[in-house]
Structures are given as C-alpha cells and as structure tokens.
Length: 116
Image (cartoon, rainbow, N blue to C red; front, top):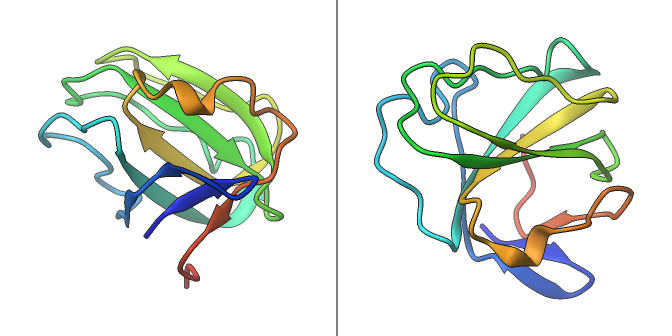
C-alpha cells in the first residue's frame, strides 16, 4: 500500500500491523517503508504508543478519522509512552530519515488501499 500527500507518494511500502506488537523486535525500517495501525475509535489515549523493545528511532504520524495529520513526533527506542496532542484513529510508524513528511500537521494523507 502507498501513502500519498497531495498526489505525491511519501511512502511506497506501507503495511497494516497489529496494534499489539507494532514494530517490537522487528528489523529496521527503510526510508520508503512504514506500518499503519488503525484504532477502533478516535482518541488520545487509545492512539498512544510505547517504544519498549523497539530498537530503532521512528517518526510517528497520528491521523484523525478523516486522515488529517494531528501530530508528528520522532520517537527514540525504549520510550515508555507517547501520545498525540489531539485525538487520532490512525498511527503511521516510519523511518525518521524520510524528509517528505516534515510539516504535515493539518494536511490530509491518502492510502491506496482501504483499511478495514
């Protein structure tokens, strides 16, 4: 699946991941890779993540139910708790070296595949 911003592909290899394990114990993501986690409801606490047993730095993008970016943070390994500033339904975890995702707050992203 691809993640698109204003008709530009910012990630060309995104996968849906279990909210239970995310990137724990996984290999380092490449610049063009990401995982997407979908929460049941839009919420600040329900979209919080932890970085325990994640051995890489990540850029985290939180989207609301309209797929508008509500927060972006860079997370270091083994941080216990990270939450967005506003309620979110989707969480994108990606390589922090991807420069195409800077300054996205308030912008809308699209996925090339519908998330169930």
